[in-house]
Amino acid sequence: MYPSQVKPSTEPSAVPPVVSGISPRERSGFYRWLVTEMQEQIFAHPLKDKSESVGWANVLSQRGSIEGVYHGFVLSTEYLNLEEAKKPADIRALRFFGLEMALLDLAYAPETDERVVSASAKYVSENLNTSLFTLKRELGERIVREADKRKSDPEKLAAWYSGIAARWAKLEVPFGLAQRNEKDEVFHFNWAKVNTLGLIEWELLNREHRIFNQLGGIAVAEPAKSIPVKSLSKTTPSTAGK
Image (cartoon, rainbow, N blue to C red; front, side, top):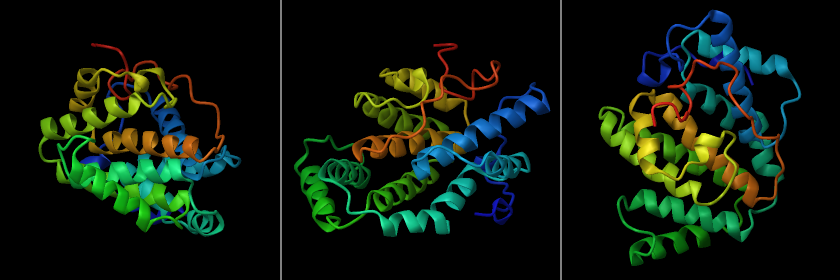
């Protein structure tokens, strides 16, 4: 993977994902923390070569987008090899994939809606031989597209994000920070309203990858207890202002 292949962007997701008023050193530390989390959850193994996270962190420092870095990972040769090498995903991961894809197809429909149940079953039957890593990538790409559709309306984007974040919190999967496990939809809505598209996308992608990893029985790194910059209360799902 080559971070230099991710070009700087002027899209909203390229806004530096940190609040103003912190030092360059703190900013750099946050980027490394973010990229390390992305690599560990996407590839489902602890990061061995820390120099690689530095390279990708530099991409963000140069106004590369979080979405661009994410695509750099899931479209890499390393990720393709994981997709091809792994056996088909088990039924628990398939059912999660099917339900989430169906709910994205049928916005605002409840899980019990007959259309959702039918669409979910169809996704499961069509992907019986699909690897866990392919499911992770396909649902992740769909999440990015859906977020992009709502980027011009912060309130609509926040409402969409918070509904998913609160619902997934009920699955009791550790998401890496205690605040991410909050089940209060209003809390997640208020957080999303003051954050960038890129961070909102990653907060959902992070959860999605962690859920798949757990359903697939993959032990990754210990969840991060906190971010390295105390002043970033608006950047991560903090309880500040709740």
